[in-house]
Length: 114
Image (cartoon, rainbow, N blue to C red; front, side):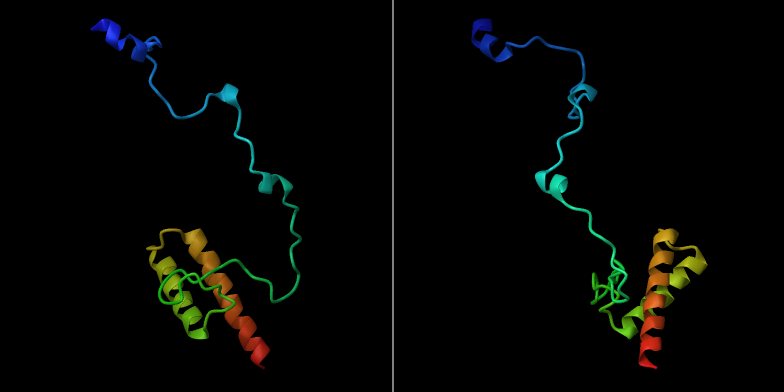
C-alpha cells in the first residue's frame, strides 16, 4: 500500500507553516502595465473642478457634491456636524473634511446666485 501512495508524497514533509505571503527574496509584484505608463495628471485650477467628495448615503449616495441638490448638501452638513459635536462620528477627520467641502459648495452656490 505504501507503494501506491509514494507518487503523491514525493516532496518531504516540513514542519514550517504554510503562508500565502511571498518571501522577501521574491520582491514586490510587478506593477500593471497601465500603472507604469500612466502620465501624471495636472491639477486643474478651474473653479468647477471636482472635489472628489460624494454624498455618503441615501437616494443620492455616491453623487458628487458638485451635482448634489442643495437640500441633500444641507442635510448631510447638519448630520455630519451633529455627529462630530456629539462625538459619535466613526471617522472625525473624514467627516469633518466632507462637511467642510459640502459647506464650501453651498457657499459657492450662494455666491454665484447673487
